[in-house]
Amino acid sequence: MANSECTFITIKPDGVPRGLIGDVIKSFEHRGFHLVALKFMQASENLPKEHYLKDCPFYADLVTYMHSGPVVAMIWEGLNVVKAGRVMLRETNPVDSKPGTIRGDFCIQVGRNIIHSSDSVESVENEIGLWSLPEELVNYKSSAQDWILE
Ligand code: DAT
Ligand code: MG
Image 1 (spheres, protein in one colour):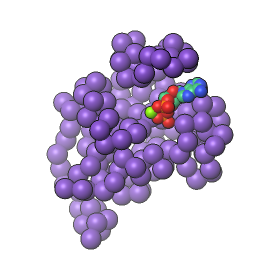
Image 2 (tube, protein in one colour; image 1 turned 135 degrees about the horizontal axis):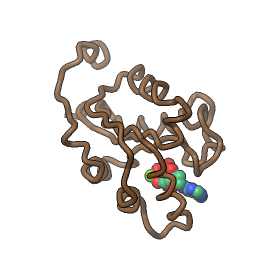
Image 3 (cartoon, helix red, strand yellow; image 1 turned 90 degrees about the vertical axis):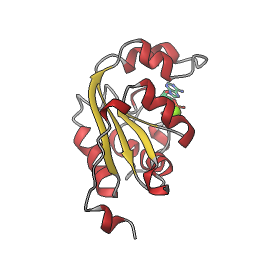
């Protein structure tokens, strides 16, 4: 079913102390997406090493940043949630992100861009497996969904 598409969202280690957990969750809740897994955790060094491509010039800094403090790792479900999530975050570099988007409202530098979201339906399964999210999945029906989807 199209409306059971899932995406992997992570509030990064800068987003947690900056008090942005609630704002990010609110954006996805208010849009009408359905939270199906959530884990507050600190990543091992190995996790971001596996998650990101090794050939980028900022790889070492990215790995250090991503395991420097706790993150909130989540799975959100809903119609076209992968694409919609990317549009909600907007550009990788916040300077290119318009106000009203998550990165456009809450950050200014690419190396501290507060949030991750999967970039394709194909990458979701790998990412949620790597971050051990499947074991956190909760299957429940939200009555709000009857008003969100026709
Ligand atoms: P996104 O997070 O929008 O999917 P990405 O997958 O291309 O972007 O890159 C992963 C992360 O790497 C990104 O969120 C922040 C960091 N990054 C990307 N480009 C960078 C750059 N030019 N300098 C520093 N960090 C960068
Ligand atoms: Mg990416």
